[in-house]
Length: 253
Image (cartoon, rainbow, N blue to C red; front, side, top):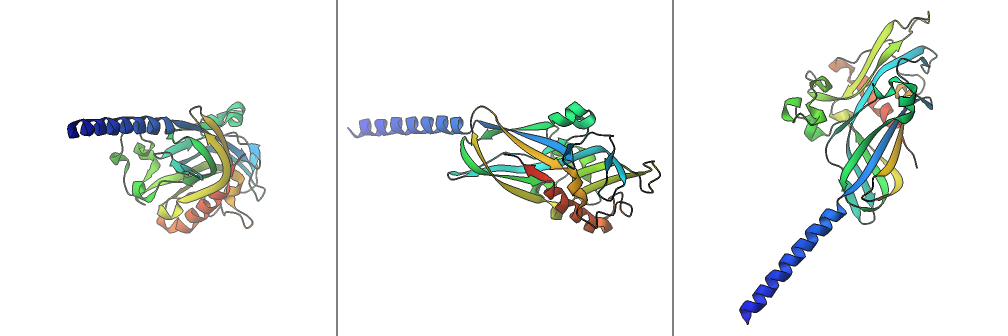
């Protein structure tokens, strides 16, 4: 009699574990398509097109990219987080007007399905991963790109904003600029109240980035004095740009 009860108990346990495994698998197959749209002064930003720097100078961009990490959704029943660090690169996407209007999409998978009321996203590479180098990651990881690492700073380059500007107002954009950010202090996390139902079918989430805000309020970023970030002595400029970059992001309903 005891043997029979034991066998039944084992069967119940195996059934429970199997059911739990199926439920977990079912609950963690949610998807979200995060669409990023790059703008400048509320207009689609097209690479190599003329725009106006906040102080009136003529400026054009030929590169904009950044790392995102720790994307998560929070609801009454808990939190679900997307794994890994991903790069968002507008350089080729925004080479045409149609591409600028379309934006670029990052798919998040393996999320727990359910109702969520807020969304978190971090800009840059988390300290634990930032302490490593590209050689520590497999080729499928965006962190394996050697061109996105700053050996002198022992940090990944969290964002790159590059282009040309007409400093002297003579009609020629003679000054190139390369505004790069990085270091643990530049790692920023954002939160927005945004309701979303995550299910097996990918749910859309749009984030606008208005790059004009990168240069701050008056007095604007002094691009003439610091057109390129390449020295440890420029940490104040790096941190100022990182703060401003976080203000560029707008999560749309």
